[in-house]
Amino acid sequence: MTYIISDIHGEYELFCRLMEKIKFSQSDTLISCGDMIEKGKHSVRLAKLLFSMKNAVLLAGNHEYAFLKYYWGLMREATDYELVLCQLQEYFPFDGRLLDWETVDRMEALCYFHETASYICAHAGVPLDRDGHILPLKEATPEQLVYDRAFKEPDVLPKAGKCVFFGHTTSMSLGHGAQITRFLRDGKRGDHVRDYYKIHLDTDAWISGVLGCFRVEDCMEFYVCN
Image (cartoon, rainbow, N blue to C red; front, side, top):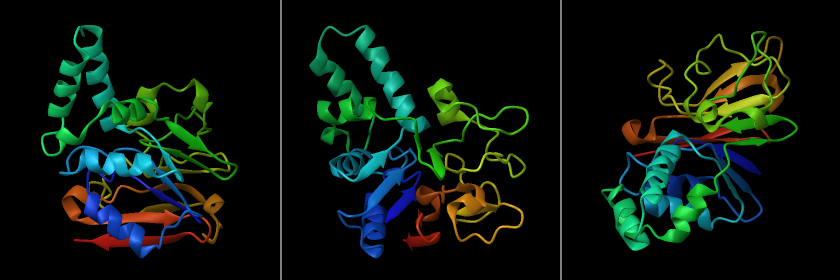
């Protein structure tokens, strides 16, 4: 089974409970649409866990991208790499001591989108042309994919046949409550991901205490809460 999640934001215990609830196994696949770090107290611990999962597809969100920009800025002036690592550890006030170079390298290697025959995953959304068709993702900049402000709007609906999974803006701030929000195509039942224009995944776990994920094969949602 394939499960898609976004915006875990350092909520390590919630994430582990969610994996237990869905009985996540080596035969399953997890796709994270970014923002695994910051806000919560266990950013590095969570990142290291996710990076250890061989069956996880991990994408960068705006918080990973901000960390990487900070890292690249330090490296441009660096003369002492161990000092750089100490500065990077200070970026995470709660568990930064756990940060090592392997985790930094894995963060730098994150992709910005994931595409299959039925759906696309990105952090903030995907670029559309004036007619609502999805533009080639390989030509999109990281900034477009992690910072997009328009894609969250209910009337912004990609016209291609693929569903877009995204997060970035909390569902609560959009008036949807702490839940996954689906945008169903006209005349569709919702039994398949292609029945949806897009699916918004950010349940604002850091504030709401609710973390959810979506299972692709049967379009079921799963939640845990504090």
